Image (cartoon, rainbow, N blue to C red; front, side, top):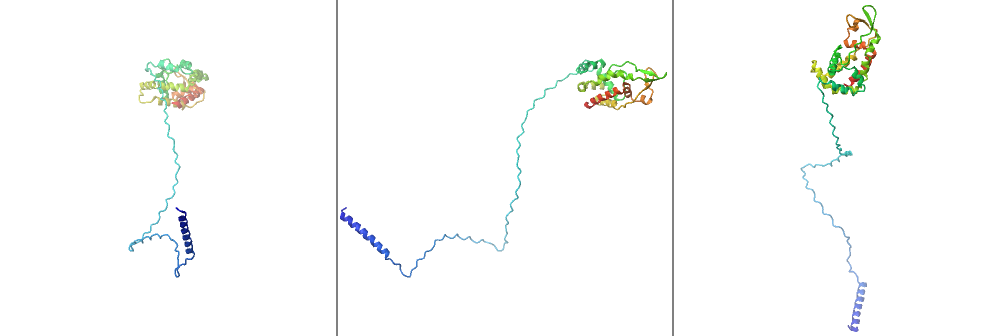
Length: 289
């Protein structure tokens, strides 16, 4: 473009700008008009429609439900699950084959040889049919009798020592009691547990022998308890004991003694000391029967 044209354009632009400034300073608002500035408001929320209430129906006031009372919650303790323990299987007990009643002596003495005082005990016991003799002896004692034969221990053949008072009356010597010392001392020295164990082992044989003498429906254990209790019920009587000898045997001159049960009279013969030792041992047996 030529310089003369450029200067012409610039002059027109300057002139136009000056004219606009002139109009701004000389502009006047028309009279009688007021300019009001209206503040901007948010649009009002639409009004909710009035509820359609029928005047003929009663109004029901709904009360708020009370809040449920707080319930104490116990703390739950969760127990650990039980642990299953596998117990070992019990070992089978050894089965003992009992012999027949007729052939039981060797078996019985074999069991007695395990006792602490086996030698002394075997020396005072009967040598044959020991089970049958023991059963008959216990049966007699339970009824208050005392057999003179068939005893399970060896018979004491020594006659009762006595002193003459006159031709018909005698008095028992205190040495008469010592005849039974060996038997009683041997018996009370038996280990109670060992004796009970052997008794339980031989129990079927005892029951069989008891049935042989007519007691098929009676438990021999009960008869043994009755025999022990009969001995324990005896009362001690103080000597000296006067005797008479109407035949080959002495009898008590005092009728109150002679009329006692045979087993109680036998306890008088063995003496008060031996009787007390015997009773103490029998109490031990009775507690374990």
